[in-house]
Length: 136
Image (cartoon, rainbow, N blue to C red):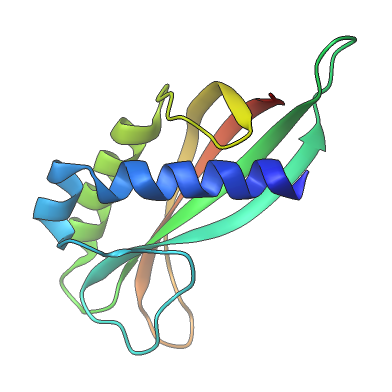
């Protein structure tokens, strides 16, 4: 199942990096696979993934609950993080990017949650999506 996770993650990364509205809002190159050290401003990071078998009698499939986390590393940028999260949800909900070795059957926004890191007070918005893929 990890190949389906990696294929979806790569496709999401590419789709978001090419989205002009997101780049105009938070800047280009602000979608990360791993959180950068000492990052400033607003940026998004791939979050948790839970994958389950979604195979049928004829196809091998994978259902994934995936998350992206938008971080606001400076005070006063919570609004910007919420705006970026809204654009990400809009870009990904029902999107059909090409996946390497898999076909994306469905990608849907499930929820968004604004919270603050207890130690630092930094705000984040966690977006959750459900994806279903089939192996080609």
